[in-house]
Length: 221
Image (cartoon, rainbow, N blue to C red; front, top):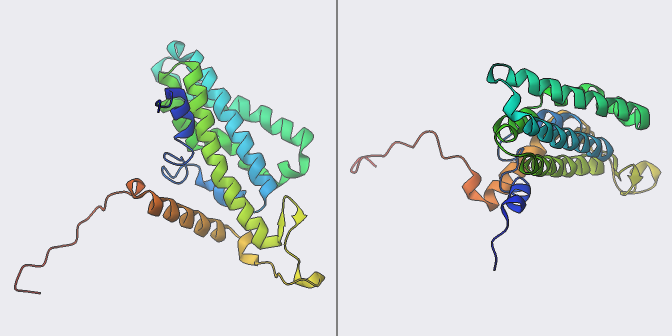
């Protein structure tokens, strides 16, 4: 059995093993805020993935020409420019979803996941590996948003992508929407449950305890 290529590992590692949300706890603000419905979660996930991949490629191309003293400013300018383009496209073609996303598309500029990957990976690697790394992290981020968005929409409204899935009690069915699913705390608990589930299956992802329990001397038990 041949070992996976480095590029394949770079792409697939962030999906589960090195997921930026569940392992590194990056970008959780949008995971809590834009996942009330699956369409907004998909749009946010796609927007961030595109911005992340393009900014990583651009920064990698010019990495040898960016002075260290202003590297963060240059990276933020590049990311912000791409975010403006994405925001304008959403307002032109997906206006209702753009209104639902509110300021969170603009906040991609300061998303710690985007800045983290451009600073730690794209600035030190060629364009192709940088874009693949960015794509993998974007897909890992997207998986979490889509999972949380699907659960919140399904149990909060009985729909998926706007289509009725669970018959509502007010229409003669059996399902009563859970209003809590439309509130931010539900996303917080769902994300916490997802992190717990993944770290239960993969205990190596759990952080070591900061403090050890004191040992009881023999004879004092």
